[in-house]
Length: 375
Image 1: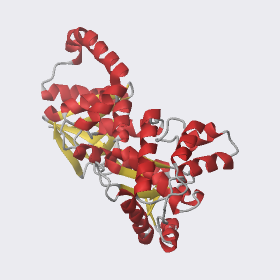
Image 2: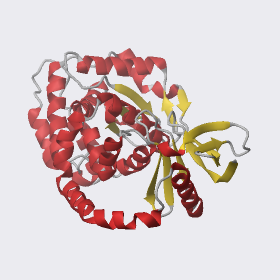
Image 3: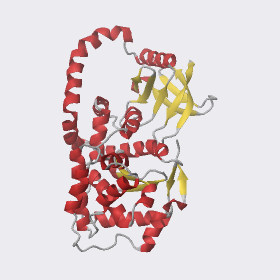
């Protein structure tokens, strides 16, 4: 007999769009429909469902499958409890009150694991990232990007003028020629009043459009792009995901759901407040210098950009730089970092412009055509 429990938000895993839905149960299946109850969105066996309380007032219900990233977000506390009880009942799981002995008996082990993860997680992530399948990381990067981009841009739109995108890809192609990267870079520009660029898992690099106005030319932008490619090379973004998600991502690795809603929902927002370690920044800077030298591009661009932003905002260098490239991609930069970059720059090195004047003009005008991002 079909029974209606209430309404929630459904994420199909294919996009960042949420849809209001009704939650029904029909024997041992949970059914999701539109609010009118006419269109069926999904039908899941209760035995395959995973309930996770991400906070005392928020529960996610998702399909326990490595190939599914769809999930249901339930904010109403009583409805969440009712759904969880129903799933346990029809799936033949023990009632929560009957599991207390098991829970208490496991607390010591959980505490030890938690302490170990908190203490060793930064070290663990550096080595664990190499065991993450690249296909999983690419999917995770795509899902996180879909979640983050709509909230980054002031106008919630991506810039997609064809000539500009081709120029950006030509810049990346020149920089990466002969360079071994774990992923083929996927580049995008988002309309924003903040000058910044950052890398996401799976080789995705996002440039905020204000950056194109702040840089003095294509070589400066190329230096910024090379730095983000350094993060891609060392899979720093994936390391940060492991650091940010902590035990949650380890748990998801065990159950085979590395890109599900429980991870994307927590990682997206958490990464906004995240920053790379000094060692990661040094690795990305060193890689950028070598990449630029190999491509015969001026290596002084990144340091010039950082110092210029500090001067423009009338701040001390540490404060200004941390607000510029500190977002998603910097343990607060320091004067030492700029000096180090300058020390690696060779003013006598033979260089050629990264892009032609026509290509640079096209890239700066990439936002003449935009696409609205779904929230």
